[in-house]
Image (cartoon, rainbow, N blue to C red; front, side, top):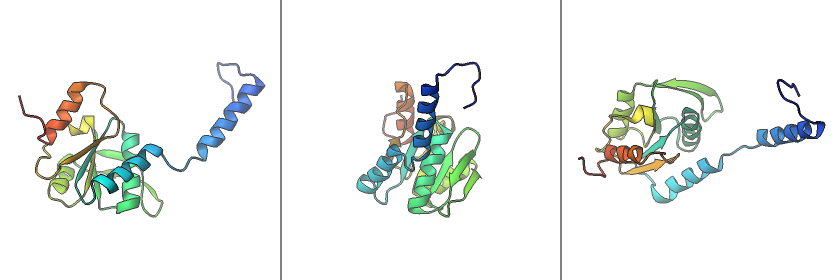
Length: 159
């Protein structure tokens, strides 16, 4: 193992190599599996808005939804209208770009079942027409963020 600015004993180096090997064998993410189960059990056939803080999580959840429901079931919004490392049903890894207005329109018109938004991308959108179900993948750190996402669905009275 290449060592830069740190000192590891031989035992530590071997333990780290073992851990890396085990991590590389992980095929599924338990949180994503739970989200898919929740959708199938509690929201079958319903439009679902999913919020995440991270684009990497957005890509991971998009990949799982695409694998389960097909490539035309999910759209996304984030700060730069791009998401990398999305895995298609055929296993190919791609980058996707979509304007937020296009994603919102497809979701509100019922053309797709799922919209995955980062907090940065979700500001100022109106999803009250069609969406009645929301999953926060990463719980917001600030109560105000959670309230804002509820306003998107018209759940909380506007003040």
